[in-house]
Amino acid sequence: MNDSDAENSPDPQGSGTPQFVPAAANTPVAAVNSSPDAGFASGQATSAYCPSCGKPVVDSAVICPGCGTPLASSRNKTVAVLLAVFLSFWTWLYTYQRDKQKFWMGLGLAILGVITSFFIIGDFILFGVWVWAIVSTAARPERDYLMYPKTV
Image (cartoon, rainbow, N blue to C red; front, side, top):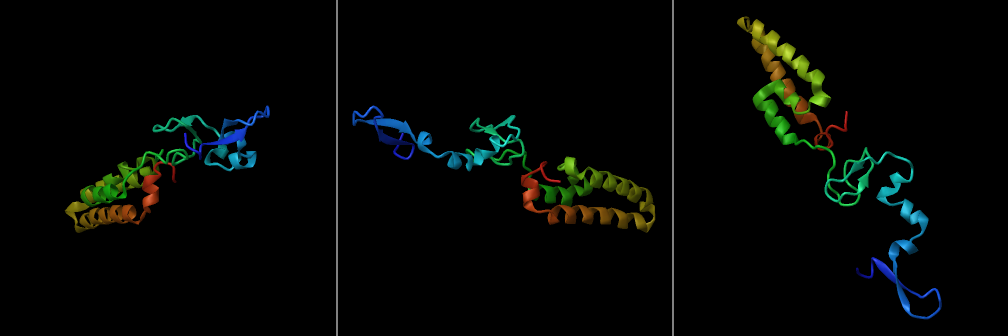
């Protein structure tokens, strides 16, 4: 350990020889409770553990306060946009927990578009669903993909 982890303090029995005392022992209680782990003292659920460092984390945490590892199953916005470009409404399966209503609406409109494609209107419906999927995924902030499925 280095000097930042521990402090040397005089022997409590007065012998004058320094003793090794961990820094946390000399830290005021207010400073301990202001740490990123302060949620544990307030009674928040701590059933989750960081897969990287093993420290307990609050269930609603997105990033481990100890090591900074992302805890949410993240998605990538670039992948979502590419799925929209090449697969239209099927991109919403990538974020199904949040976009299930859009997926089923897109599927219904695509079926309607295929049925009516013998008339010119069906092609416009299919094109509209494709553009809707691209715009919807491209307009969503990157943060929503990184924090998936914790955002609504």
